[in-house]
Amino acid sequence: MPHFTRYIGIDYSGAETADSSCKGIRVFMAECSAEPAQVQPPPSPRRYWTRRGLAKWLCEELDRDIPTLVGIDHAFSFPLAYFEKYRLYWPTDAPRTYVCFLREEPSGSGLKRTGERSWLRATETWTPTAKSVFGFGVQGEVATSTHAGLPWLLYLRKNCKHPIHFWPFDGWEIPEGKSVVAEVYPALWMRRFRRDDRDGDEQAAYAVAAWLQRADRSCSLAGFLSPSLTAEERGIAKIEGWILGVV
Image (cartoon, rainbow, N blue to C red; front, side, top):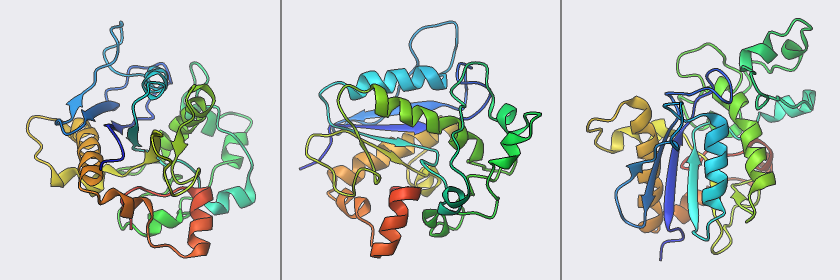
């Protein structure tokens, strides 16, 4: 039997501020065996999702009594090397704050807490095209979206009335009936699904929702939720996170 009832794929963006309308943020949701459909933001003067608006919507959806698997396209943590050197928080959820504002602030403290581009998480070394979370300004970067998105994971942790399971930080095994939020890498799956008339961001979110749905309903998801890692690698992944689908 499938573990979940709904599957949400999110293609993320770290552009501008937490309250900016971001064309790069796209959301697709599939219910049971139905094809994923795009979810538009609530009516407002902003045409596209904002990061703050998306977090609030997700919180409301995850508080419903519906087992849901959410895949978000940004890293959920930093490499172990970063934590060995720094213990700092990136307040990119503050109003009118760009990621670049913190990196380039006059005091220089942003540069003092920025990791090296050569630092990779273990899960990224298993994927030939994955970028470092500190690789700002390169094609296909995930750095900006990661730094912008991490505070909103904390928001979900603090504000969801029904506790959700952040995989794999809360454990590799998923309790029955609990909703899960996991890191994904759409490039693994985008070519597996027909694109139709979707743009790149829409296809990324669609592919995530469709793959999560297919993996769960084909009973192959369990293998992806428990990749073949050594005890040491699992310990590192509990700190750095892991990309769902990388085995």
